[in-house]
Amino acid sequence: MDNPSLVYLHSLSNGNESFKNRIIQLFIEELPEELSLYEKALSSKNLFWASEIVHKIKHKIAFLQMEESLEVSEKHELALREGKLKYQREFLDIISKILKFLTDCKD
Image (cartoon, rainbow, N blue to C red; front, side, top):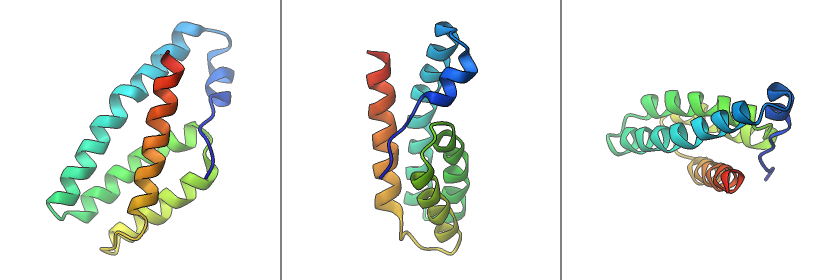
């Protein structure tokens, strides 16, 4: 599985460390909230809602230039819309990897 990268963020920030840190902090705050909503959607057996949350999270995965993970997330989104949890474990592994990466960036 691929690893998150801040190359795109570095090019966007153009050396502005404050901007870069704000974006990282935003991801650190939003991703756990989105994950919580995802888990709530699953516990209520609302897989369509879960697929919508995965769709939102995919933008962060793309931003972090995780092409393989983006493909898995797209497959997971579509599977959820079909009522299947086929890629759930892989998706959760991706989210864990991103959260660890972002937390390590802040240290």
